[in-house]
Length: 84
Image 1 (tube, rainbow, N blue to C red):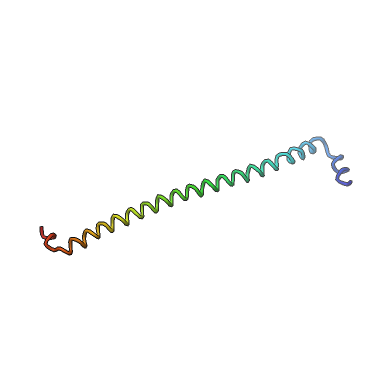
Image 2 (image 1 turned 90 degrees about the horizontal axis):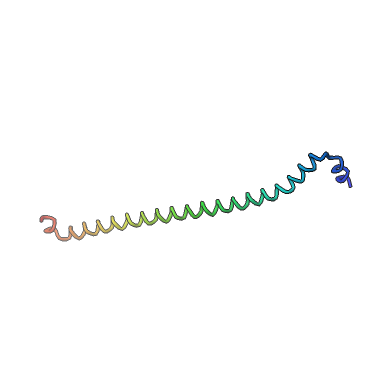
């Protein structure tokens, strides 16, 4: 029971300090774990939304360019249309 003798020799200040640490550290660790999880999910969600918007814009631009090129090919098939 060496720890008991060590604990009995502590002043009231250190006993209260150890008690506060014993209570605060698990709560702090739990809060950090919870907040880190929430931040990770938020970052993942925001990245997904940005990638979705980027994919939509790229597909829209590609679609517009292909439609324009299709019109160019159709016009070049009939050179008389280009003269008018």
